[in-house]
Image 1 (tube, each protein chain N blue to C red):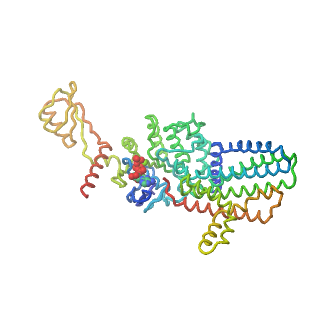
Image 2: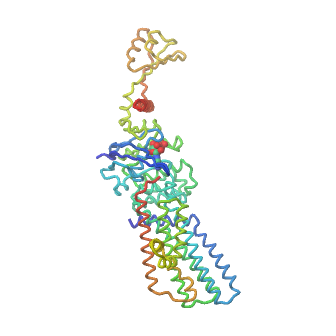
Image 3: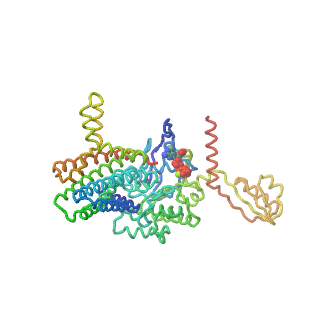
Length: 313
Length: 258
Ligand SMILES: Nc1ncnc2c1ncn2[C@@H]1O[C@H](COP(=O)(O)OP(=O)(O)OP(=O)(O)O)[C@@H](O)[C@H]1O
Ligand SMILES: [Mg+2]
């Protein structure tokens, strides 16, 4: 059973006060997230990531479509006890302390009174807020609030967590901790669905990603599959101080530093460059594939989307 | 379900306390003791009249202001600040949230009224040095005031579920004023003709009939309150608050959060 099945969810907002116009924030979206996956939901600003998450949380209502979470209708209240949600730029009752807030949310999530205190303490430890648990949230910094947000999302030990830009507002250590936390959640058998526009985070963490742009799904797949579809390049390093003409002819971009030459070249030319080096009797030092980053893929995708959109006009 | 409503209610109460809402009690105490000392020079009869009249009117007005002031923000502020996101993504139904908020606000007012009532009785004792049987009537007046609060709370919640805090405040306050003259409006309606009769009758029965809840003047003159009125007002307040809350729930259930 998939953890999340999104079945054609669609959202139009009506904007404007006097003259109402319709704004399509999310084209019908269909997506399946398997149990136990870390799933990245990628897209630039305004793509519709937050809209999708709000739809799934029942905070806004879809214009069409539906979803199933853990095999049940997404509006089913029993589903809510098994999911955790971190909104983007989370904000909480600022008259409460971190400890009080988590305690309250534990009550609302139905964490039994006996375990509540222990869960709250445990989570405060996990998100590194133990020392400030007695401070009112109005005195918290942005990154501290983000930590509270993550804490409240995992408090009731949910089966699926939905994070909207979990790394935002965090310092490098914080980001690292969140990455580790997500991996840990996965190892505990949980499903993690998170949105981001920071591609390197998705690249290192995700089993699969979906790419969304202007409310439309542009691609879904394993990170390797998505990146391999774009032609890769390799970096070749050899001993020497100049570039033989035969290698220049292959179209390699070369840099000479000291007694080394570093060339980047299309993957398909890899054999040709090795042959050329052998013929020139140059000593090869290393060949490393330069993995196309998700970023490159992303840019490529968007560029293609833009040109097709332009040509249909 | 019941426990979740209770948790939401007690958190609402906690918010009111931490936002120093109960500080109004200080102003109330100052007002009442000032009045008690000031009229202390006149005869005991008038003193009693003033303390009861002024005291109960102040209890009612302070409460109304608090009810409107907190009530208008109860839902809209949570939507605006997005504190609702992490509440409604839990197993909390939207109607439970509204009902919890209502009980939280109503509870705040009951506690507030309780302390004020102590103040009124203290001032009364200060001016007349004893309690008489008729003073128990003050409890009836206080009970009616608390019923009135329930109606106001539910109405502000209703308004705040669809309009901005400022507009909600204007709506709620106007309804309070019109409702205080509901009796006159009904009399007017019975005298009007044609279309305006329909309109006035409709309006007269739609606005909360607060005039029936105001027994301050009559109890100050030690006139007893009919048992039937107590029953009638109780049922009316229950009915009205339930309707207004249901309206709030119906609107809120369908609303997209910003
Ligand atoms: N309440 C609203 N009313 C009208 N339009 C909205 C509303 N909320 C979102 N939108 C529009 O829907 C689109 C998608 O917004 P959304 O917040 O989902 O983007 P996002 O992918 O989360 O972006 P970001 O990375 O900036 O957080 C945007 O064009 C936005 O203008
Ligand atoms: Mg967003």
